[in-house]
Image (tube, rainbow, N blue to C red; front, top):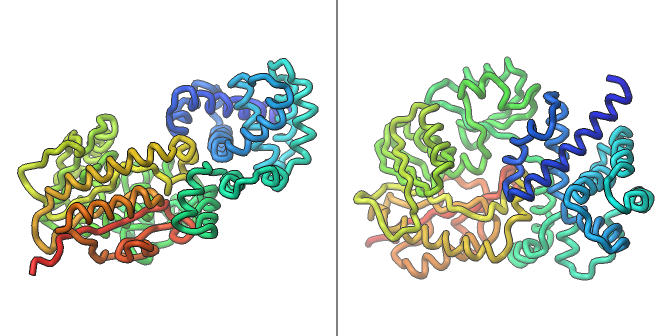
Length: 460
C-alpha cells in the first residue's frame, strides 16, 4: 500500500469511528450494537480496519469526559458557538489520538490523518480551531487539566475517566486507594476466559484443538471447566472451535457464580433473571443435563437468545419462561436452589463496556436497588424450606447500594434468612458481610462481581 493510500485509510478510519459514535449517541444504544452497523458506514472489508475503528470507538468513549473538557475549554469557550454533533465527535476521536493514545503518537500516519481532517472540517472556525487546537494538543498534559479542578472527587474522575458521582460512592465505601485501583483497571483490557463445554467434549480434546488453532491457554486453579487465554493467533470468535461450540466465552467471575450455586443432579433450580443464558447453560452442564431448571426473564429479545443457546447446546433440562419476576406471583412448585443474578448498573463491567459508565447515574442506581430488593423478596418465597436450600444473589456491580444495602434490607424484613458460607471463595470479603465475597478486576482478572449466599436460619 502506498503512502497516500495508507494515509487515506487512516483518515477513513477516523471518519468512520466518529460516525459510529454519533450513531450510538443518537440512537441511545450500546457501543457493541453500534459497531454492528460498521458495514453501513464503511465499504472497507479489511479486518485490520475494523479492528482500528473498534479501538477508536471504544477508547474515545472510554475517555469522553477528558475529550469533552478539552473541546469545551479550548474551542467552544473560545469561539462561543455550539459545535455541530458530527464535528464534535470527530474532534473527540482526534483528541483521543493526539493526547491519550501513546501508541498512536508513535505512528506518524495518525498525526497526519488528524491534521488533514482538522483542515477539512466543515465548520466556521476550522482554520482557527486547527491552529489553536494542534498547538494546544502538542503541549497538552493531563496534569495541566487536573490543576484546574478544585473538587477532589471530580479530579479523580477526570484522571481515571469516570463520572464524579461514581467516584464519590466508591470512595465512601472502599477508600481512595482501592477506588483508584478499580478505576484504573476499568481502563484496561481484562484477560479472556473460556468456559469449556464438558457436557459434549472431553477437556483434553478441547485443549488440543485450541492448541492446533494457535491458542495458548492456562487452566484455572479453582474451576476445572474454565481456562484463561494467554495468546491467540486469531480472535476467538473466528476460530472453528468456537463455531463448533467447544466452549463459551464467559468471564471467570460469571463462571464462578454457577460453581458457587453448586447444582446437583436431579435438583430443581430457578434461574430468575436468566437471559441471555450463559449461566443457565452452565448450570445445566454442571448438572449433566439431568436436573430441572426453570429459566425466567421478562426481556423477549434476550430470552430468544437464551432459547437459541439451549438449542445449540441441545439441553433438555432447561425450561424457559417469559416471566416478570417482579410480580407478586410464584410458581406452584418450590426450588432447591435459586440464582438471582439481578439486573444492575454493571459498574463492574466498565472495562469491556466503557459506554455504560456514562449512561447510568445515582438516580438510576436507586431505582435498580428497589428492583433488586423486590426481585429478592419474591424469589425467596419460592425456596424450598430446608437447610440445604439457598439463594445466590449476585450482581456485576461494585456499588454497595446494589449489594450490601439490598441484602441488609432483605435480612431485616425477612428474619428467617441469613447469609451462609460459600463453597468457593476467591474474592475479597465484604466489609459489612464477611461471608459474602466481591471480585475486583485488578485482583481477580475478571469483571467486578458481588456474591451473596442466602439460606434459612437453623430450624433447631
